[in-house]
Image (cartoon, rainbow, N blue to C red; front, side):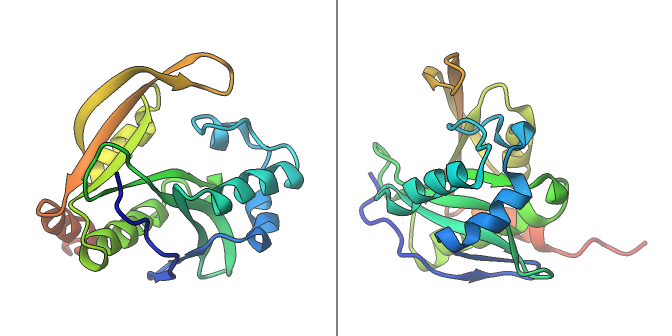
Length: 197
């Protein structure tokens, strides 16, 4: 179990800023991904069809003691374009999970996800002293699995029929981990500029 959940902080990157999620972010977030079934396809709640529904989900994360949620703000526009969280990890010592992550489609296949993960993993290891960062996803979500592997996640197992999806079907959950001593090499690979031809 995570001994102490992290305190909310602002994590500043080149193109994104992670700041504590508040209900003031909801209008931007709804514009970014509200009502979009593809954005919400793999998340544990049904697609929010109204700003009010998204506000209820955000309020749950904000007030739940097992999550520390961040709004992902695109620095170029100053608008929130998704969210991500640190989450408690019962059964794992000195560990924290990164999860409940979504971004509006406008930033898919951009540097946003990589930059967010680098900010969160750096903070977890360098500032908070965790031993492990966990990431998990639906066994059917191959795009997410590829993204997790790309940042250095090592497949640690699959929990069969781990939980129900919003549509009532069973989800198998794929677990990945990154250890503190593995991260520097992955970070170097992810943040080094590409060599010029």
